[in-house]
Image 1 (cartoon, one colour):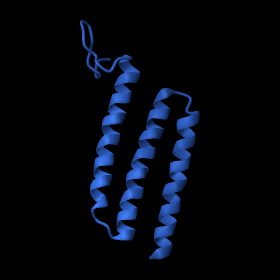
Image 2 (tube, helix red, strand yellow):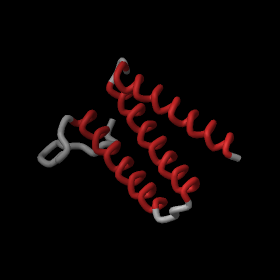
Image 3 (spheres, helix red, strand yellow):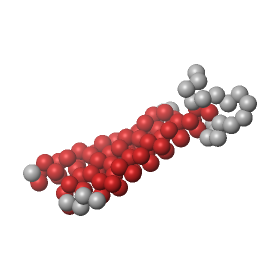
Length: 99
């Protein structure tokens, strides 16, 4: 069981490193945003794995809050990338779903 946990941890950290490389070298802004989202998701997995290994089940709440913050931040950054304005107020300001 310990070997499985170690291999799982190493695999998660390897994918986090690959996501970090993509975030730094991504050719477009959308590649970088997806890489940061993947990094945040893998961070939630690491917190959940730490929760399982240590037995401190209170940390699962931290993982859930971090996942929600990650989601809200990615939506805000995507809106900023598309509209160049987070407020979006004023005449002619469309919704993020406008094509």
